[in-house]
Image (cartoon, rainbow, N blue to C red; front, side, top):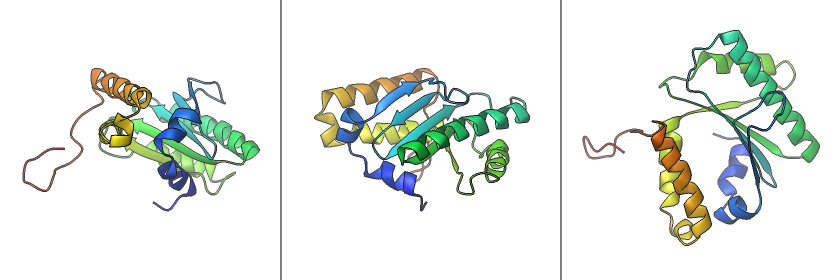
Length: 169
């Protein structure tokens, strides 16, 4: 995906994650997103939903409010915004399109990224096995704690198939 916020996220290394950001959980910001990771160049906002079947209007209003609050913050700080919605299902929730359509009235570049929980679990698991991460006990401990928390809450699981038939990854 060609997006400046994602490009900035991909360029962060473990030192940026350890020493730069302020990680805030349930920070009030026109709604209360679950996680905000505020780095020098990008504000990463993560909203996690176990039940995507709540009333669509309420759900859309929550996403729009959180996005607008985060958007105002990044404009003041001259940063990029990466807003993620994590859900359990295999299909992108329709409320994302509804929220983006509503946001396009004021911000034509509004983008809500969707990922399934197991994709994030797999991504964190892969990162935790990198040599530079293994060498940094603090980063490794934080990643392992997050991975364990996701596993405890049934947010882990297969994300696809490896090249050999039947090897689930």
